[in-house]
Amino acid sequence: MRRLIACTALVLAVFVLAPAPLEAHEVRPAYLRIQQTAAEQFDVLWRVPARGDLRLGIYVQMPAHCEEPEKTLAWQEAGTWVERWSTRCPGGIVGQRVVIAGLSSTVIDALARFERLDGTTQVARLTPADPGFDVTAAESWSQVAATYTVLGVEHILLGIDHLLFVLALLMLVPNMRTLVWTITSFTLAHSVTLASATLGWVHVPQAPVEAVIALSILFVAMEIVHWRQGRPGITRRWPWLVAFTFGLLHGFGFASALSGIGLPEHAIPLALLFFNVGVEVGQLAFIVAVFAFSWLLNRITWPGWAWRVPVYAIGSMAAFWTIQRISGFG
Image (cartoon, rainbow, N blue to C red; front, side, top):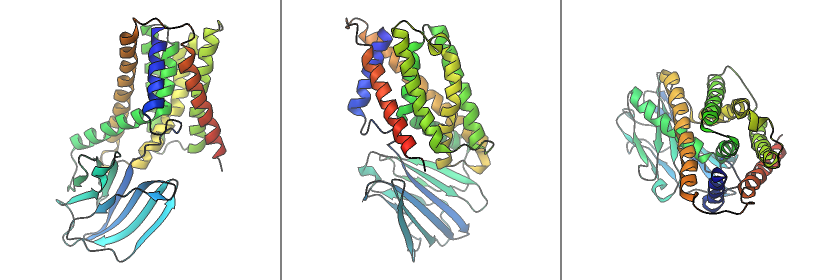
Protein backbone atom coordinates (compact mmCIF):
# COMPACT_ATOMS: atom_id res chain seq x y z
CA MET A 1 0.00 0.00 0.00
CA ARG A 2 2.83 2.41 0.83
CA ARG A 3 4.36 1.88 -2.60
CA LEU A 4 0.99 2.64 -4.19
CA ILE A 5 0.80 5.88 -2.22
CA ALA A 6 4.30 6.81 -3.36
CA CYS A 7 3.27 6.14 -6.93
CA THR A 8 0.24 8.38 -6.41
CA ALA A 9 2.51 11.22 -5.34
CA LEU A 10 4.80 10.73 -8.31
CA VAL A 11 1.96 10.62 -10.83
CA LEU A 12 0.48 13.78 -9.34
CA ALA A 13 3.92 15.38 -9.59
CA VAL A 14 3.98 14.52 -13.29
CA PHE A 15 0.62 16.24 -13.79
CA VAL A 16 1.69 19.32 -11.83
CA LEU A 17 5.29 19.75 -12.94
CA ALA A 18 5.45 18.46 -16.50
CA PRO A 19 5.03 21.24 -19.07
CA ALA A 20 3.00 18.96 -21.34
CA PRO A 21 2.15 15.89 -19.29
CA LEU A 22 -0.06 14.19 -21.84
CA GLU A 23 2.59 14.13 -24.55
CA ALA A 24 5.46 11.72 -24.03
CA HIS A 25 8.88 12.88 -25.22
CA GLU A 26 7.55 16.44 -25.61
CA VAL A 27 10.75 18.03 -24.29
CA ARG A 28 13.06 17.68 -27.29
CA PRO A 29 16.54 19.15 -27.62
CA ALA A 30 17.73 21.21 -30.54
CA TYR A 31 20.09 19.38 -32.88
CA LEU A 32 23.16 20.68 -34.70
CA ARG A 33 25.20 18.72 -37.23
CA ILE A 34 28.36 20.15 -38.76
CA GLN A 35 29.71 17.97 -41.55
CA GLN A 36 33.19 18.64 -42.90
CA THR A 37 33.14 18.15 -46.69
CA ALA A 38 36.62 19.52 -47.46
CA ALA A 39 39.57 20.87 -45.49
CA GLU A 40 37.90 24.28 -45.09
CA GLN A 41 34.31 23.56 -46.16
CA PHE A 42 31.42 22.61 -43.86
CA ASP A 43 27.73 21.74 -44.28
CA VAL A 44 25.53 22.75 -41.35
CA LEU A 45 22.16 21.24 -40.39
CA TRP A 46 20.24 22.95 -37.58
CA ARG A 47 16.96 21.65 -36.08
CA VAL A 48 15.11 23.93 -33.69
CA PRO A 49 12.08 22.89 -31.58
CA ALA A 50 8.88 24.64 -32.64
CA ARG A 51 5.31 24.84 -31.41
CA GLY A 52 3.02 25.49 -34.33
CA ASP A 53 4.49 28.32 -36.39
CA LEU A 54 6.53 29.66 -33.47
CA ARG A 55 10.27 29.05 -33.75
CA LEU A 56 12.48 29.03 -30.67
CA GLY A 57 14.88 31.96 -30.84
CA ILE A 58 18.21 30.12 -30.76
CA TYR A 59 20.84 30.36 -33.49
CA VAL A 60 24.15 28.80 -34.47
CA GLN A 61 27.26 30.93 -34.14
CA MET A 62 30.14 29.43 -36.09
CA PRO A 63 33.69 30.62 -35.33
CA ALA A 64 34.25 34.26 -36.24
CA HIS A 65 36.57 33.52 -39.18
CA CYS A 66 33.92 31.44 -40.98
CA GLU A 67 32.34 33.12 -44.00
CA GLU A 68 28.67 34.04 -44.13
CA PRO A 69 26.67 31.44 -46.11
CA GLU A 70 25.50 32.52 -49.55
CA LYS A 71 22.19 30.70 -49.19
CA THR A 72 20.26 29.14 -46.31
CA LEU A 73 17.49 26.62 -46.89
CA ALA A 74 14.73 26.59 -44.24
CA TRP A 75 11.58 24.53 -43.80
CA GLN A 76 9.32 23.09 -41.11
CA GLU A 77 8.78 19.39 -40.42
CA ALA A 78 7.55 17.20 -37.52
CA GLY A 79 7.38 19.99 -34.96
CA THR A 80 10.81 21.46 -35.77
CA TRP A 81 12.27 24.25 -37.87
CA VAL A 82 15.06 22.94 -40.07
CA GLU A 83 17.82 25.11 -41.56
CA ARG A 84 20.66 24.04 -43.79
CA TRP A 85 23.62 25.93 -45.25
CA SER A 86 27.28 25.63 -46.25
CA THR A 87 30.16 27.77 -45.07
CA ARG A 88 33.88 28.11 -45.65
CA CYS A 89 36.19 28.44 -42.63
CA PRO A 90 39.80 29.23 -43.63
CA GLY A 91 42.17 26.99 -41.67
CA GLY A 92 39.32 24.77 -40.47
CA ILE A 93 37.55 24.91 -37.10
CA VAL A 94 39.60 22.53 -34.92
CA GLY A 95 40.39 24.35 -31.70
CA GLN A 96 37.59 26.86 -32.33
CA ARG A 97 34.35 27.26 -30.40
CA VAL A 98 30.81 26.85 -31.76
CA VAL A 99 28.07 28.52 -29.71
CA ILE A 100 24.27 28.37 -29.71
CA ALA A 101 23.20 31.97 -29.24
CA GLY A 102 20.09 32.38 -27.11
CA LEU A 103 20.29 28.90 -25.55
CA SER A 104 21.17 30.39 -22.15
CA SER A 105 17.71 32.02 -22.08
CA THR A 106 15.87 28.72 -22.56
CA VAL A 107 15.29 25.56 -20.53
CA ILE A 108 16.20 23.08 -23.27
CA ASP A 109 19.46 21.44 -24.29
CA ALA A 110 21.07 21.11 -27.69
CA LEU A 111 22.92 18.14 -29.14
CA ALA A 112 25.86 18.99 -31.39
CA ARG A 113 27.53 16.55 -33.75
CA PHE A 114 30.72 17.36 -35.69
CA GLU A 115 31.61 14.92 -38.49
CA ARG A 116 35.26 15.12 -39.49
CA LEU A 117 36.57 14.56 -42.96
CA ASP A 118 38.07 11.19 -41.96
CA GLY A 119 34.67 9.89 -40.85
CA THR A 120 35.19 10.26 -37.10
CA THR A 121 32.77 12.34 -35.07
CA GLN A 122 32.52 14.48 -31.97
CA VAL A 123 29.27 14.68 -30.02
CA ALA A 124 28.59 17.33 -27.39
CA ARG A 125 25.65 18.18 -25.15
CA LEU A 126 25.03 21.90 -24.85
CA THR A 127 23.01 23.38 -21.99
CA PRO A 128 21.77 26.85 -21.01
CA ALA A 129 24.67 27.00 -18.54
CA ASP A 130 27.23 25.97 -21.18
CA PRO A 131 25.84 26.76 -24.66
CA GLY A 132 29.00 26.09 -26.68
CA PHE A 133 31.63 23.45 -27.38
CA ASP A 134 35.24 23.42 -28.53
CA VAL A 135 35.87 21.47 -31.72
CA THR A 136 38.59 18.87 -31.21
CA ALA A 137 40.84 16.96 -33.60
CA ALA A 138 39.94 13.68 -31.86
CA GLU A 139 37.59 12.72 -29.07
CA SER A 140 38.85 10.70 -26.09
CA TRP A 141 37.03 7.63 -24.81
CA SER A 142 36.25 9.45 -21.56
CA GLN A 143 34.50 12.25 -23.44
CA VAL A 144 32.41 9.73 -25.36
CA ALA A 145 31.53 7.86 -22.16
CA ALA A 146 30.54 11.00 -20.26
CA THR A 147 28.50 12.47 -23.12
CA TYR A 148 26.49 9.33 -23.87
CA THR A 149 25.93 8.49 -20.20
CA VAL A 150 24.34 11.89 -19.65
CA LEU A 151 22.28 11.51 -22.83
CA GLY A 152 20.99 8.15 -21.62
CA VAL A 153 20.02 9.53 -18.21
CA GLU A 154 18.24 12.47 -19.81
CA HIS A 155 16.35 10.29 -22.25
CA ILE A 156 14.86 7.98 -19.62
CA LEU A 157 14.04 10.79 -17.18
CA LEU A 158 12.34 12.86 -19.90
CA GLY A 159 10.57 9.83 -21.35
CA ILE A 160 7.37 9.91 -19.33
CA ASP A 161 5.96 6.83 -21.06
CA HIS A 162 8.97 4.67 -20.14
CA LEU A 163 8.85 5.89 -16.53
CA LEU A 164 5.13 5.19 -16.19
CA PHE A 165 5.67 1.64 -17.40
CA VAL A 166 8.32 1.10 -14.71
CA LEU A 167 6.06 2.81 -12.17
CA ALA A 168 3.14 0.52 -12.98
CA LEU A 169 5.37 -2.55 -12.67
CA LEU A 170 6.52 -1.40 -9.23
CA MET A 171 2.93 -1.40 -8.04
CA LEU A 172 2.63 -5.09 -8.85
CA VAL A 173 5.97 -6.41 -7.58
CA PRO A 174 5.34 -8.27 -4.31
CA ASN A 175 8.87 -8.30 -2.82
CA MET A 176 12.46 -7.16 -3.29
CA ARG A 177 13.65 -10.40 -4.87
CA THR A 178 10.96 -10.22 -7.53
CA LEU A 179 11.76 -6.53 -8.03
CA VAL A 180 15.41 -7.38 -8.81
CA TRP A 181 14.35 -10.05 -11.32
CA THR A 182 11.83 -7.68 -12.92
CA ILE A 183 14.23 -4.78 -13.37
CA THR A 184 16.97 -7.13 -14.60
CA SER A 185 14.59 -8.62 -17.19
CA PHE A 186 13.52 -5.19 -18.40
CA THR A 187 17.18 -4.10 -18.66
CA LEU A 188 18.28 -7.20 -20.58
CA ALA A 189 15.37 -6.95 -23.00
CA HIS A 190 15.71 -3.30 -23.93
CA SER A 191 19.51 -3.62 -24.10
CA VAL A 192 19.17 -6.33 -26.76
CA THR A 193 16.78 -4.40 -28.99
CA LEU A 194 18.56 -1.08 -28.40
CA ALA A 195 21.82 -2.57 -29.69
CA SER A 196 20.19 -4.52 -32.52
CA ALA A 197 18.23 -1.55 -33.88
CA THR A 198 21.02 0.98 -33.42
CA LEU A 199 23.56 -1.22 -35.21
CA GLY A 200 21.11 -1.81 -38.07
CA TRP A 201 20.57 -5.53 -37.47
CA VAL A 202 16.81 -5.10 -36.99
CA HIS A 203 14.52 -2.56 -38.64
CA VAL A 204 11.11 -1.89 -37.09
CA PRO A 205 8.72 0.96 -38.08
CA GLN A 206 8.82 3.50 -35.27
CA ALA A 207 5.16 4.59 -35.25
CA PRO A 208 3.73 1.13 -34.41
CA VAL A 209 6.44 0.65 -31.76
CA GLU A 210 5.47 3.88 -30.01
CA ALA A 211 1.79 2.88 -30.09
CA VAL A 212 2.50 -0.54 -28.58
CA ILE A 213 4.69 1.06 -25.88
CA ALA A 214 1.67 3.14 -24.85
CA LEU A 215 -0.49 0.02 -25.01
CA SER A 216 1.96 -1.82 -22.72
CA ILE A 217 1.41 0.81 -20.03
CA LEU A 218 -2.36 0.48 -20.38
CA PHE A 219 -2.07 -3.31 -20.11
CA VAL A 220 -0.12 -3.16 -16.84
CA ALA A 221 -2.54 -0.56 -15.42
CA MET A 222 -5.44 -2.93 -16.16
CA GLU A 223 -3.51 -5.77 -14.50
CA ILE A 224 -3.26 -3.67 -11.33
CA VAL A 225 -7.03 -3.14 -11.30
CA HIS A 226 -7.64 -6.88 -11.77
CA TRP A 227 -5.22 -7.72 -8.96
CA ARG A 228 -6.87 -5.26 -6.56
CA GLN A 229 -10.22 -6.82 -7.42
CA GLY A 230 -8.94 -10.26 -6.44
CA ARG A 231 -8.13 -11.50 -9.95
CA PRO A 232 -4.33 -11.39 -10.22
CA GLY A 233 -3.11 -11.78 -13.79
CA ILE A 234 0.15 -12.73 -15.45
CA THR A 235 1.88 -9.47 -14.49
CA ARG A 236 1.27 -10.04 -10.77
CA ARG A 237 2.39 -13.68 -10.96
CA TRP A 238 5.34 -13.24 -13.33
CA PRO A 239 6.21 -9.53 -13.57
CA TRP A 240 9.70 -10.36 -14.85
CA LEU A 241 8.17 -12.07 -17.90
CA VAL A 242 5.99 -9.08 -18.76
CA ALA A 243 8.93 -6.74 -18.13
CA PHE A 244 11.10 -8.73 -20.54
CA THR A 245 8.43 -8.96 -23.25
CA PHE A 246 7.55 -5.29 -23.28
CA GLY A 247 11.16 -4.32 -22.58
CA LEU A 248 11.99 -5.50 -26.09
CA LEU A 249 9.61 -2.88 -27.47
CA HIS A 250 10.86 -0.14 -25.17
CA GLY A 251 14.37 -0.86 -26.45
CA PHE A 252 13.26 0.07 -29.95
CA GLY A 253 12.00 3.36 -28.51
CA PHE A 254 15.41 4.03 -26.94
CA ALA A 255 17.06 3.18 -30.27
CA SER A 256 14.92 5.77 -32.05
CA ALA A 257 16.21 8.48 -29.72
CA LEU A 258 19.80 7.31 -30.12
CA SER A 259 19.57 7.22 -33.91
CA GLY A 260 18.51 10.87 -33.84
CA ILE A 261 21.64 11.72 -31.84
CA GLY A 262 24.00 9.56 -33.86
CA LEU A 263 26.99 7.48 -32.82
CA PRO A 264 30.68 8.33 -33.21
CA GLU A 265 32.01 5.98 -35.89
CA HIS A 266 35.31 5.49 -34.08
CA ALA A 267 33.64 4.44 -30.82
CA ILE A 268 30.22 2.94 -31.62
CA PRO A 269 30.36 0.09 -29.04
CA LEU A 270 31.56 2.49 -26.33
CA ALA A 271 28.86 5.09 -27.04
CA LEU A 272 26.17 2.41 -27.18
CA LEU A 273 27.34 0.89 -23.91
CA PHE A 274 27.38 4.16 -22.00
CA PHE A 275 24.06 5.36 -23.43
CA ASN A 276 22.57 2.16 -22.04
CA VAL A 277 24.41 2.72 -18.74
CA GLY A 278 22.86 6.18 -18.59
CA VAL A 279 19.39 4.75 -19.19
CA GLU A 280 19.94 2.31 -16.31
CA VAL A 281 21.26 5.02 -13.99
CA GLY A 282 18.20 7.15 -14.68
CA GLN A 283 15.88 4.18 -14.24
CA LEU A 284 17.44 3.21 -10.92
CA ALA A 285 17.30 6.82 -9.72
CA PHE A 286 13.58 6.82 -10.49
CA ILE A 287 13.05 3.58 -8.55
CA VAL A 288 14.96 5.01 -5.59
CA ALA A 289 12.66 8.04 -5.73
CA VAL A 290 9.61 5.76 -5.52
CA PHE A 291 10.91 4.07 -2.39
CA ALA A 292 11.98 7.41 -0.92
CA PHE A 293 8.39 8.61 -1.27
CA SER A 294 7.24 5.40 0.39
CA TRP A 295 9.51 6.02 3.33
CA LEU A 296 8.41 9.65 3.67
CA LEU A 297 4.69 8.89 3.45
CA ASN A 298 4.49 5.66 5.43
CA ARG A 299 3.12 7.35 8.56
CA ILE A 300 0.13 8.91 6.86
CA THR A 301 -3.20 7.09 6.99
CA TRP A 302 -4.70 7.00 3.51
CA PRO A 303 -8.24 6.03 2.52
CA GLY A 304 -8.75 2.61 0.97
CA TRP A 305 -9.53 4.07 -2.45
CA ALA A 306 -6.21 5.94 -2.72
CA TRP A 307 -4.64 3.24 -4.88
CA ARG A 308 -7.07 4.09 -7.67
CA VAL A 309 -5.55 7.54 -8.21
CA PRO A 310 -2.21 6.48 -9.74
CA VAL A 311 -3.68 3.48 -11.54
CA TYR A 312 -6.44 5.39 -13.32
CA ALA A 313 -4.12 8.35 -13.98
CA ILE A 314 -1.56 6.07 -15.62
CA GLY A 315 -4.24 4.15 -17.52
CA SER A 316 -5.88 7.33 -18.81
CA MET A 317 -2.60 8.78 -20.02
CA ALA A 318 -1.66 5.48 -21.69
CA ALA A 319 -5.05 5.23 -23.40
CA PHE A 320 -4.68 8.79 -24.71
CA TRP A 321 -1.18 8.08 -26.06
CA THR A 322 -2.38 4.86 -27.69
CA ILE A 323 -5.20 6.60 -29.56
CA GLN A 324 -3.00 9.57 -30.43
CA ARG A 325 -0.20 7.41 -31.84
CA ILE A 326 -2.50 5.08 -33.79
CA SER A 327 -4.29 8.08 -35.32
CA GLY A 328 -0.90 9.34 -36.50
CA PHE A 329 -0.28 6.26 -38.69
CA GLY A 330 0.00 7.03 -42.33
